[in-house]
Structure formats: C-alpha cells, structure tokens
Image (cartoon, rainbow over all chains, first blue to last red):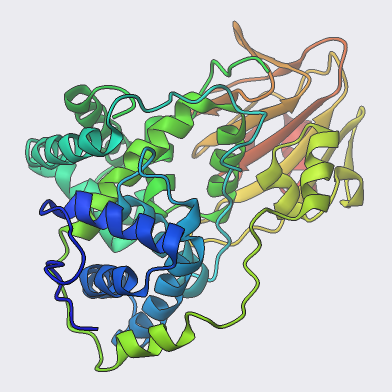
Amino acid sequence: MRADETGKGKLDLPADTATRMAVLLQRVGRQRDREAFALLFRHFAPRLKSYLIRQGSSTEAAEELIQDIMLLVWRKAEQYDPKRAAASTWIYTIARNRRIDVLRRERRPEPEPEDPMAGPVVEATGDAVIAFKQNRKRLMQAMTELSEEQALVVKMSFMEDKSHSMIARELDLPLGTVKSRLRLAFKRLREVLGEGW
Amino acid sequence: MVKPRHHPGDEWLVSYAAGTLDEAYSLLVASHLTYCGVCREKVRAAEDVGGLLLEQQTPTDLDLGSLDRVLARLDDDVAVPAVRDIRIQTEAERAHLPLPLVEFIGGDLNSLSWRSLGRGVKAVRLDAHGREDSRLWLLRAPPGMRLAEHSHRGTELVLVMHGCLHDGSEIFVPGDVDEKGDDHWHAPVVGDGEECICLVVTDAPIRFKGLVARLLQPLIGL
C-alpha cells in the first residue's frame, strides 16, 4: 500500500477532500476496495483519535475504538449513500454510536431509516455530490458566523460529550439559557443553509 | 400516518445528533423520529455539524501498525445483521409502536410489570441508564381519563403512541410530543374512544398539586 493520503496513487481521485472521501467510501462499499479503505483510514483515523480523546477516551481506548469504528465502516460501507450524507458525517455517526456504547456504556436508540411509519423524506435532487460539496462550504462559513456563545455550546455538545446540564454547570448558566443557545445556533445554521441542507 | 404537528424542541434534536442525551431522552427522540420525517431531516442536518467538526479535528498520530491491524481483520467472518431483528420488527408493526421502543423493552407491552395507579391508569418505569436524573415511563390511561394536575421542577416530554391526549387547548395524537417546562401546571385529559399509551421522560421528580396526589407520589415514584 503506497498511495499517500492525497490519493495520487493508482486511483484517479477528485482533489476536493469531501468529494474524494465520498468516492473512496463508495469504492469500499461497491468493490470492497482495500486501497480505498486504507486511504479513508489514513484520513479519518487520526481525526477520530482526536475526537475520541476529546470525548474523554484514553489514548489506548481510542486506538481500540478506532479499530472497531473502521471495521464497521468496512462492513457497512455498502449502506453509504452519497446523496444522503457526506462521508465524514456518515463516519461521524458510526463513531458517535460506538463511543456511546463503549465509553458511556449506554444504549443508542435509532429509528429505522426506511421505517414505513415515518412521513415522506425529502429526496436529494440534482448532482448530489456537487450539492453537498457546496453545502459543506456553506456550513463551514455558517459555523464561523455563529456568535461565540452559540459556537461554544455547539462544540461542547458535539466534541466534548457535554449534556445540557453539564454545560449549564460548567458555564454557570441557567439550564434554559443553554437550551435556547443551542436552539438559536441551530436556527441560525438552518437560516444560512436552508431547510434540509 | 398523520404527520406529527407537535415536535420536541430543536435542542433535543441537536443533542440527539451530538450523542449527549441519556438513554431516556434518546429513546423518546428516536421514537418520535419514527413518526416524523421533518425531525429526521433536522437530525440529519445536525449530524452534518458533527461530520464537519470531525473533519476539522487536528490529526493525532496513531500507534504504529494501527492500519495493518485493521487491514488484517477485514476478512474476519463477523455476521453484521443487515436488517434488524425481524421478530422485534414484526412485533413493533403489529403493536403500532415505534421500533426503537420495542427494541428497548425487548418485546411487547404485555411483558412489562405494569403497576396500577387506580382508575384504570397503569404505569411502568423502564430501566434507562444515563448521567442525569432522568426517568423513563410508559403510561396507559383509559378513554376520558383526567390525569392528576401536576407541575415539574424540570422538563417533561410525553410522546403519544396510541389514542390521544388533550392538554389545554391542544390535542396530541400518535407521534406528537407534548413538552412542558418548569412550573407549568397541567392536567392532561385522555381523548374519548381509545386507550392512550404514552412514553414519558422527566428529568426531575414530578411535583403533584393535590394532597392525595402528593401522598401518592412516593408510592408511585413519579
């Protein structure tokens, strides 16, 4: 395995990271492509390690979790749909569920994706890969436009596994303030990105 | 299936996407998502924030051989269930209950040890883990029943799964979430015709108003 992370090996890959990762993940899903998997690993595993350590994992536990997470990525890659999610988002959800299971020892209830009980889902239209490449850029921009207070509660939630009341205690704020900051941050992002971004 | 009109606040959806909720809240949100395409899209959008933040992490070096270790395990013959437990799925469909709930209790409602609270009202507290003092309940009440007037020291989320519930001027049907915050006094009434089955999460003991209800509180542990 000699291809470096930028993918300038045998594979002819897009230069944009988000698009490249989506292509690689699809290659793993469709062709069980080990080279593509190794490239995904080289990109995501070091980021997953930082993520897991920020979530309260020891470095040893993080290494073990990364093995689990990346094996799940390999096994579930067939289910990945680039119209529905960026590769990083898809891998994020696997990592999140796994760390809740292992680090917090709690169950993670999830709806069935195709549950007939749910109402109709808005289908992605047009060139989905281009759409989420643009969305990703706009999301990045929108995140920088959040107020400092809003960005902080978002980061503490997603990156530090802090519940509403843990954030309230840590920032010495009323619980209601924490909740409204999260609501406002999300509202702001949706305003910038449009509903169903 | 009627689209739900009453949703949990966005902070619950965002925190579900972030993975910070206790099992109790997580189950209630996942169960609501079973009915609600709108909130599923919101959760998906919020998960994108997680994806972006993961992407933006500064890489930390892995142990040497980490990639080789995982490559060596790719062909391990591990059965990954492609679909969920069919028995549980069938159970959920038959009972018109959200799949996450049926998975959580591992069977049907009749397998639970319901406690009678009088006047046909029954409740069972479900075993849910978490870091907060959250409590998870299933409640069933006969048609027309007025539930005890009560208030909270925290939040109460009620997901209606069968029958309907009137609370003030609002009506809650299956899939709807009734969210009540601090110091909101209310006495929900079960709609006529059908038994009402709800999933309830509270994050602090409920404070009942009436004396008898207060006397009952330690007994029923609400």
